[in-house]
Structure formats: structure tokens, C-alpha cells
Length: 347
Image 1 (cartoon, rainbow, N blue to C red):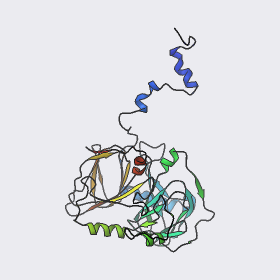
Image 2: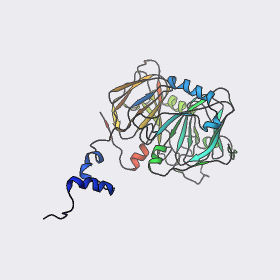
Image 3: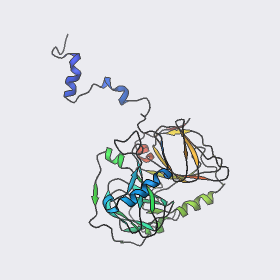
Image 4: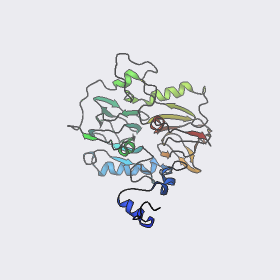
């Protein structure tokens, strides 16, 4: 018995497409792949190669015209979203002495990892937070923020944001502040002064936030932690002596969408290969070495950036027998874990 005598298979697919309908059986392999599809590709950006372009546009393009003078690190496999890796973005920003970057806010969470220079600060929700190399500065989503440089010489930092994720969810908002800069409303660096004391949190602050309340995790504290640990811990066979920046309220990641860590690879470190479903961006704080991602080797030096896509195998190597290598890493691990999709294994 023919149930639909007026429909013929040879034309049905075109007719259904006109109705914006698809046949699942023709797309099963794409919709339910055996492993995560490799959209983002492993990639490496040399800071030495990028710096001349940063300096050129610092001269050629005013901060007023640019609003933010940033070189976007766009993954070759994700140019349509401007993402550096799935759900995450990295860019290198530069500001010159006397420049004021316009205050604004956006839905996306952001942080700045300071690369070089001194004398600049960012104002986040009325708190001026000063920048020094190796510092991690947070700007949670929808917080007003602007930057000012009152020192000498160029100031550069790594911008990390989750806007590819926010945009994919159709939840992005953006707004300019009424003036170029905010007025300071609390003492400078107050959040760090209150919270950066190990496990001691102020009891008089009642609000508990999903993002860390700390404006700046200073490099001096990070270095002190590495020195205290020294040779007393062997660390991870994969990531070396790896420390996570945490939210003092929850003990979890600094932001609900991004986990930030710093890892010390001791001289001669040869990591065990591993893969996991958290897409990761790495920045070289100090030293030289190499990372093998899916059998592709990337030699890196100080201030470089590289990406490890989701489910790509990776292993770090520090060939120096005398000097440490230090990497800063951030990933979308909190999102992946919150959705119950985190998986990892040694390979």
C-alpha cells in the first residue's frame, strides 16, 4: 500500500529542504561523530614575529580610532568566529604612555595576563588595578573597565575572553561608558589587598560571586608559591608543577567559563602525552621548550602563544638542563565539566 502516492523519493529531499526540513538518516555521521571534530587546529604564534606589527600600529593608529589596539590570534580553522580555540579568544593588546582606552562593558568574561611594560592600570567597576609582567587581572562579564598608561614605554598584555562561547549562545551585549574613563570609587588594588592571603577571606563581604572577586593575582605571589614548593613536589607527569588561580569564595575556577593555571616545567622535563576535552590556550611566561600536539611539534620561546584543541594529544618538553620553563594556560574546562562532557586520558 502506498501511503503518499503524490510524493516521490527522487524529489522529496528538495521539497523538504524548501520547507526547512532535513532527513536525519542522511546526517547521522556529521551530527553524532565518533570523536570531537577537529575544527580548531593546533597553532603557534611567535611573539617576536608579532611585536613589530604591534609597534607599527601603536604609531599608525590612535587609541581613539581603535578603542582597543589588539592583534587577534585567530585559529586558521575558526576564522568565521574569530576564535583562537573552541569557545575562547586570545589577543595581544598594546597601549602607549598617556593613552586612555575608552571605558566599556560586555557580556563576555575577560582577563589580562601582563606581558611587558609597567606604569599602566585598568579600572574595573571603580577599582584601579595596577599592571606588572606576570600579573593576572580579571574583568568579569558586564563590569565597566578602561585602561590608562601613566608610565613610560609600551605596555602589552594577553587578552583572554570567552566571547566565542557567548556569541554562539546569542547572549552577547555591549555598552560604552558615558565618559572615556571611570572615576575611582575604592582604594587602588583593594580586591587584591583584601583577598590575596592564602585561605584567609574577609568575613564582612557578604556577596559571593561566580567570578573571583580578586582584581589582580600578582606575579610576586605566584613566584612565591613556586619558590615555597621548590623541589618538595614532583607535580604532574603531564603538566609539571601546575597551580590553578582560584575563586576564594568557591575554591573553583576564577570565572564560570574559564580556568586559569600556571605551570612550572623543571629543567629536563619530558611530559607524558595526554588528551582531554577542554580546549586550551598557552602563553610562555619564561623559558624555551616545545610542545607536541597530535604528533606536530611546536618550538616555543618567551611570550609566545599556542593552542591545544579539544581531544588533541599534547606533551610538553623543557630541553634545558639548567633553566625552568613557565607556561600560563587557560581553558574552557569549567563549561565542559558543568555540562558533564569532560573526558581525559593518557595516550
